[in-house]
Each structure stands twice: as C-alpha cells, then as structure tokens.
Length: 50
Image (tube, rainbow, N blue to C red; front, side, top):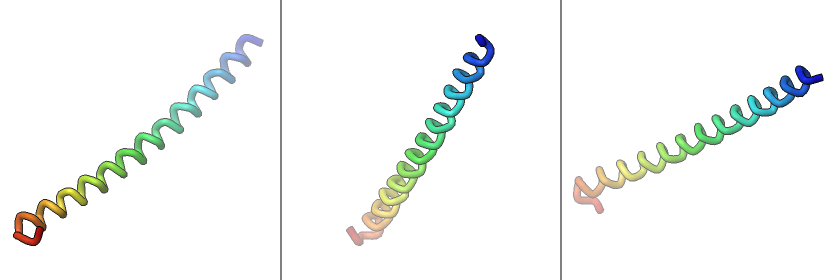
C-alpha cells in the first residue's frame, strides 16, 4: 500500500513539474517577442524614423 501511494505521489509531482516547464517556456517566448519589438523600434529610431 505504501508503494502505491508513493508512486501516485511521484506521478502527481511529475505532472506538476511538466506543466510548470510548459508555462515557463511560454513566458520565455512572450519575453523574446517583446524584446524583438523593442529591438525593431530601436532600429527605427536609430535611422531617424522615430
């Protein structure tokens, strides 16, 4: 019985970690897109098209 409970707990913990990885990866992609927009705007301003 202890073994079954430990396996269930481990499974739930693993699922939680996988979900967190997807969330962090999504946040990283959002930050990357925001950074690209800032870079584009900076290039426009450098060329005098601000």
